[in-house]
Amino acid sequence: MSAVEPRLVSTRLLRSELMLIYGRRRNWAGLAVLAAMPIIVAISVKISPPGGSSDGPDFFSSITSNGLFVALAALTVELPLFLPLAVASIAGDSIAGEANLGTLRYLLAVPVHRTRLVVVKYIAICLFAFSVTLLVAGVGVLMGLTLFGGGDLTLLSGTQIPMSEGALRLLLVCGYLGICLCGMGAIGLFVSSLTEQPIGATIAIMILTVASFILDTIPQLDWLHPYLLTHSWLAFGDLLRDPIAWDGVREGVMRATAYAVVFGTAAWARFSSKDVTS
Amino acid sequence: MSVGLEDNAIAVRSTGLTKRFGRQYAVNKIDLAVPRGSVYGFLGPNGSGKTTTIRMLLGLVRPTAGTHSLLGHAMPAGAGRVLPRVGALVEGPAFHPYLSGRRNLFRLDAADRWADPATAAARVDGALDRVGLLAAANKRYRAYSLGMRQRLAIAATLLNPRELLILDEPTNGLDPQGTREVRTLITHLAADGATVLLSSHLLSEVEQICTHVGVMHQGSLVAQAALPELRATHAARATVTTDQPQDAAKVLGDLGATDVVVSTDTVQATMGAVPPEKTVAALVHAGVPVKGFAQSADLEDLFVSLTGEGFDVSG
Image 1 (spheres, each protein chain N blue to C red):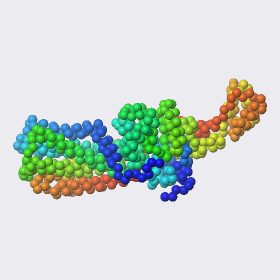
Image 2: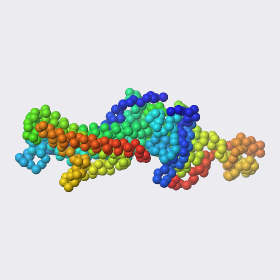
Image 3: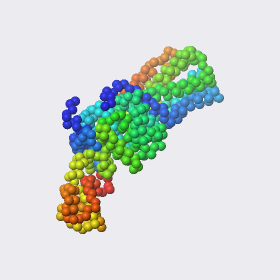
């Protein structure tokens, strides 16, 4: 009969998973919306530059001085809704989508070990999370440099740094926001293991995320703030100071990791004992 | 793990396998024994517990009680070792609608750590070819008809050589031509040495190709035997074609036949344990001109008597 021993490590399932995510037209549309924001930001600012002291996000006023700020402004405006929504739609779909189609039973009968499936799904969600922050930043940099040019850039703390280091800081921001979204993706994976309705899972994840943002703005609930998923998402601004203020970022990475561990484990525990009747 | 001699002869075995959903027993203490090399017809009306049983066999659903083994390996512990050698079709086809048939098979093959990626393209096309789907391989699954979807699901079970095929209603949605092709395919697979567990709610569909039959009714396995055994033990119905039906009816009556039905040129009767050769001899001896004689174990009757005739699904 066929080979008795399986290959210990195979990336085929992960690659297949990524092909499903990036090959799906629905997701192209979502990515197009994400990519459209930096374009809109850049063009708007080009047409009508903001005045000296605007009420808008910090980065808008700096855009005319350096194109890199288009990327940062776009990330800032997409952080409360678009970026989480993109990750929530992928995470919500991860297990519930397969259950909804019925393909889950065939994957498990292949067999794919349940633990392996959960791990591969989560890796795919995380890679997607990093890819969307990089997409927004990439399009932003492209638009910004085209319309406003590059050169040395002035940090939030007032220090000037060369363009190359500015690009490095931007990559750090993307990495940090990616990690934050991975923490959220773990919640998505868990919710997705509870249901056969991918849209329902996505909505649930968004409700949790938006609720976390809202609770984070209520001062009377400050005792709750350290436990909120989104509490340190905006700390990415600290990466643009000189020297970098690592405290908030470190805390954010630890918070995301804690969410990933807790909800990743919950997803695994739930899924590995679940009756697959879809 | 030690594999007993007996276990090697049995491809699927269950002991007291039970699944309860809430207060309802979907499957109640069934003891399956599917011999290696057999084509086992797993029969029962809709809702009788066939699919739940198959889900338990494959480890998709956790039994409430009982144990089972596939190809001599205890499940679900042995799933990793044994499932690569098992091809399964469970409760109809299910694929990604926006991928083509070929891409869908690649997806399943990619998930299989036992499959050799180097031969994937050849195996995928081979499987598509075996079910006559090669021409539509690049069409999106969304555009497939029900019959094509069913064929794709069967193709998925053929991506690798299998020792055991568990096929849940494989001819569902197929046209008569497709049904015949699937039957031929199953016969070929069995001839190559695979054991086939074939579920159906239609006896007539599986009767021709099965060597063994198990009948489910309301979650219980109410009959399980080799097909010839079942035929022999069950009342056979004879049809005599003759010019003198009245005389024939009398002879059959003397032999102990029941339910004798006389028409213009035929007589039908249930012959009990009387072998056909004795019936024919008695007819000829009595001077009845026998133009034709046919006798079949009426399994349909047996099936109906075991599972009830009503149209209602099992509750």
